[in-house]
Amino acid sequence: MKKSAKVIIMALLSASMLLGTVQTGLAQQLNEDNAEIRTAEVESEIEYAVTDKFSEYYMIDDALLTLCGVHTAQGRTEYYYKVQLSATLRYTAVEEMDYFQGLADAAGIDLEGAGTFSCISRSADDISAGLQPYASAVFNYLDEEYEKLDAYIGKQQMIPIYMKAVVNEYDYVELFRMQGMNMLLLKNFPLVQEMN
Image 1 (tube, rainbow, N blue to C red):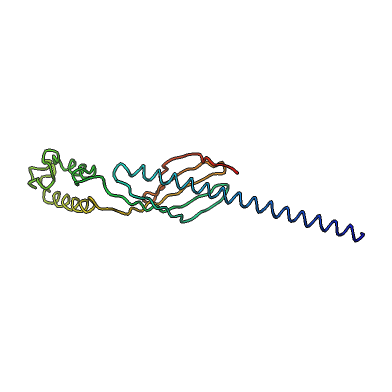
Image 2: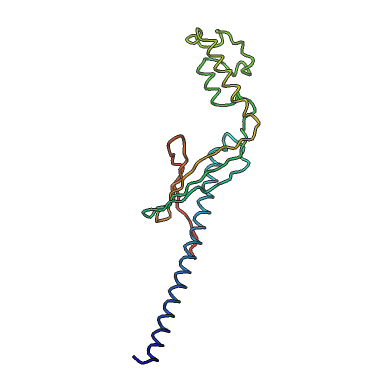
């Protein structure tokens, strides 16, 4: 092969490799940009879902998201988040809480008629007939629960919430919240991305 043909072939190979490198770099940058858009949209949905879920019982001050891990396999990407929810209970008294009202109802106590739990005389006549032999234990339990709940009234709390977002290859998202040892599905939604 002549020297000029070798130079031309080398120049073409170099240009081809350079073009391939540039295209690979552009594709990688596009994938990174799309991953950032995807992550931002997923985080926005997580923040909305968490604040929406808790706003019935809490005044939400802030939601801080921390990405704890990303796992990609078989066309699915799983994002794991810890959400620190800064919130204050909406209740001004323990007697307003559904949970405590349920405890009082189960014991046969008329909270509405009494006004406040502290106004109840704590006699066996104040609870249902079936529980009257256990009046002391019932009131001890209710007093303990009341005291625990009262500690949260008017106090700002940091509530940790663990979330998982699963994005499939078609950019459809399933959003889960960890509850005990289970993952509860909160919502499904498609990602709406602007593609460059």
